[in-house]
Amino acid sequence: QVQLVESGGGLVQAGGSLRLSCAASGRTFSSHNMGWFRQAPGKEREFVAAISWNGGSTYYADSVKGRFTISRTNAKNTVYLQMNSLKPEDTAVYYCARHLEGQLGAGITRDFGSWGQGTQVTVSS
Image (cartoon, rainbow, N blue to C red; front, side, top):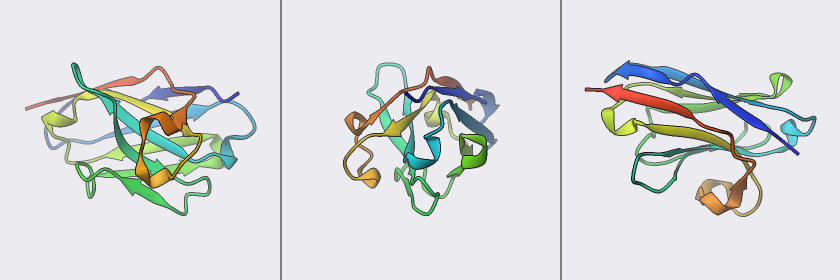
């Protein structure tokens, strides 16, 4: 069973940057595709980015493409989300999760599991 812990959230001004980290426990992390999602108050959880088990393929929501970068370091059991040019609409709780089934790039929430507890990102205007 993989357990995930997110960190790196905080308060930042519009145009600023943050890097989120997701640390995974367990010895099978390197075999899992991973994803980042976010949930704003009153809204459904939405796909942000995903990365294949070896980092060879990445996928992004249109809303973050060109601003966010997902990466991973399997030796450290960690997946990252570098967020640049942040906007107030990026404000949300950000979660990482393990991809369980389906097409990774489709970013379907129910295809992911082992959710972390989330980390709050707040972007002020």
